Image 1: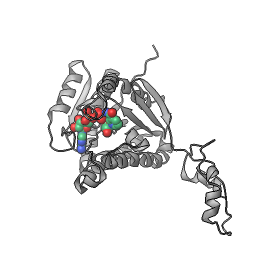
Image 2: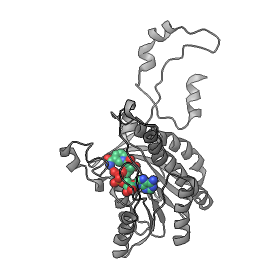
Image 3: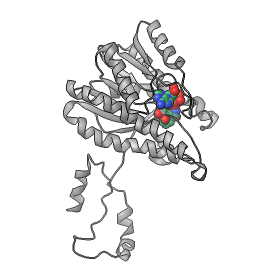
Length: 298
Ligand code: NAI
């Protein structure tokens, strides 16, 4: 059987005490990986902590003979990120796969959103991904292998009412991935992002009940496992996955029009008169890096 396996691989899954992260941890362990089940065990808005969620996933994995160790640190600090990686090193000796999955919500319309609600959502979703990835990266670089997953959201990619904090953090991860994929390319470290929609405590009062029932979190798992597999060498991609639907999505660059040569003046009227071409996305391209955009300019 040409099964996708993870024997001998060490995986860290943040926020794996519940929801999607729990399922990634269980399936990776079933397929041979040794897993670090990280979870702070807080509430949906990031407050509080509890060791029970991570411990129960570890117990579940050990019960079927899998290898797992819990970690209860928050991803939101550099120190927490280092401790999570250290847990993997102490228990299993290395890190091959990192699934940045921990996330929280603090939804408010902008006029009601406090500084604390803005900050904590950046700290967990965006900085949390930085702190764990930063600690894992040197190990992956040294061994010339790494699979890193980022968890974005359609909220950031496309917009969602009442989530400016969350949308900004989740879109920030796209920028993070775009830069890191270049830093990892030489070392066989791939970086890919998923934008899932799945039934969990994060979405129970956000999604319409009919849709909630159909969006099984189990249906997100196969894509994430494929992207974590050593045979998958794609990097820098973003995927929608929801209810059995899998699709690539991307930031694209339209061909536009070149109105100047660096010497002539360009008027606002020229922008107005060429608006159709400037705003047109026909034949738009996915660019591999900022440098690639220079071809349109010079
Ligand atoms: P969930 O709330 O069931 O699981 C998230 C886990 O992260 C929780 O167990 C929580 O304790 C943990 N966590 C929160 N803050 C943490 C911290 N500072 N350190 C360590 N662990 C922490 O949520 P779900 O739905 O499984 O979400 C997983 C990821 O997918 C999140 O990043 C979320 O933003 C993202 N996502 C989920 C969508 C969905 O439809 N469920 C939609 C788009 C994105």
